[in-house]
Amino acid sequence: VRAWEVSGAFGLENLVATERPDAEPGPGEVRVRVRAASLNFRDLLMARGRYNPRQPLPFVPCSDGAGVVDAVGAGVTRWKVGDRVCPIFAQSWHAGPPTRELLASTLGGPLDGTLREAMVVPEGALVATPAHLDDVEAATLPCAAVTAWSALAVHGGLKAGETVLVLGTGGVSIFALQIARLFGARVIATSSSDEKAARAVELGAHEVVNYRTHPEWWREVLRLTDGAGVDHVIEVGGAGTFDQSVRALRPGGHMALIGVLAGPAEINLTRMLMMNIRAQGIVVGHRAAFEEMNRALALHGVHPVIDRVFAFDEAPAAFAHLAGAGHLGKVCIRLD
Ligand SMILES: NC(=O)c1ccc[n+]([C@@H]2O[C@H](COP(=O)([O-])OP(=O)(O)OC[C@H]3O[C@@H](n4cnc5c(N)ncnc54)[C@H](OP(=O)(O)O)[C@@H]3O)[C@@H](O)[C@H]2O)c1
Figure 1: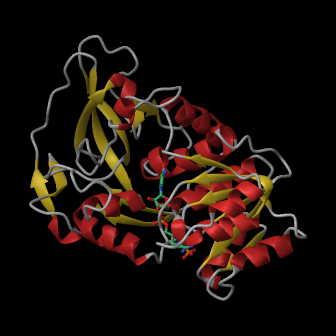
Figure 2 (figure 1 turned 135 degrees about the vertical axis):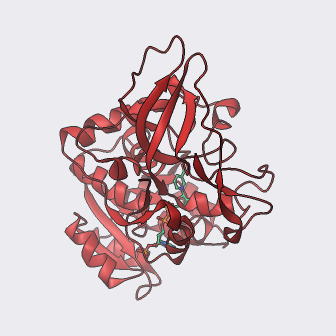
C-alpha cells in the first residue's frame, strides 16, 4: 500500500512516498482502508523532530484519519467489514485518567500514523464515524476536535452563558468555537487577520480581536467583558500568549493549556495564583470523550470547518500549507 514516511532524517524535505506491505489483521485486530487524513500542528513538529527528537525513523506521520474496515482478525466483536471508523489518537487510552504507558500509544509518532492507504490497529483503537460526516470531515476529529472537547466539556465544565476565549483560528480553536456554541456559550476569538476574523464571526464567534492591530489583546478582551474577563481560555499559544491569557481570564477562570504556537517568553506565575486561575494541561483525550463528542456533533449536525483538501500525492504541499498558517480550520488529505 502507498504510504508517506519521514525517512533518513527529520525535516519536511524528508517526507517521502513509499510502499508498505498490506498487513493482515491478527487476533483482536482490524484493518482499515484509510480514506482521508488531516494535519495537525503536531504533525509539523513531529516531522521536524521538534516534538520528539528521539522518534525512530522512518515513521508514517499524522494521527488523524477516517476510513472503512476491510478485514477483521479472529475474535473481533466491535467491528465488521464495511464499518466507517476513525482511529483514536492514543490507541490504548479508552477512558479514565491517562498513564505514561497509555500516552505512549499515539499515532503519527511513536506509532506509525494515518498517512497510508491501510493500517492495522487493535479493535479497541477505533470509534464509529458520525453518520452525518463524510470521510474527509471525519478525518479532522481524532486530535483537534477531541482536544477542544476535552478542554471545554470534560475538564472545563462549560455552562451556557459563560464566555470562551479561543486564540487564533487554527484547527483546535475553530473546533472549540463550534463546541462552545453548542453549549450556549459566548465566544471571543483572536486572529492575525481581519479576513479570518470575518469568517470566525460567520462561524459563530461573537467578537474577534485582531492580535496584530491589538498587540495587548487582553485589554480588548477585558473591554468586551466589561472588565470581568472570560471564564475559559483555549490556550494554544503557550509561553508567548500565556501572560495575556491569564490577564484575559476572570479571577477563578479556567485555562486549558494546549499548545505551543507562540513563544518563547517569560511567564508571570504570580499573577496566575493571585487571580486563582485553574490551569489544566490537555493531551487530546480518550476514546470515551471522542464517542461522547461524536454524539453531540451528530445530534446537532455540526460539520468540521475544512480549509483545503489535498490529494494523497500532494502531501508535502499540504504540510507546507499548514506551515504557512494561512488556513482557517483544518487541512486535509484525501486518499482515492
Ligand atoms: N495538547 C494537545 O492535546 C494538543 C492537541 C492539538 C493541538 N495542540 C497544539 O495546539 C496548537 C494548535 O494546534 P492546531 O493544530 O490547531 O494548529 P494550527 O491549525 O496550525 O493553528 C494555526 C493557527 O494558530 C493561530 N496562531 C498562530 N500563532 C498565534 C499566536 N501567537 N496567537 C494566537 N493565535 C496564533 C493562527 O491563526 P490566526 O491567523 O487566525 O491568528 C494560525 O493560523 C499547537 O501548538 C498544537 O501543537 C495540542
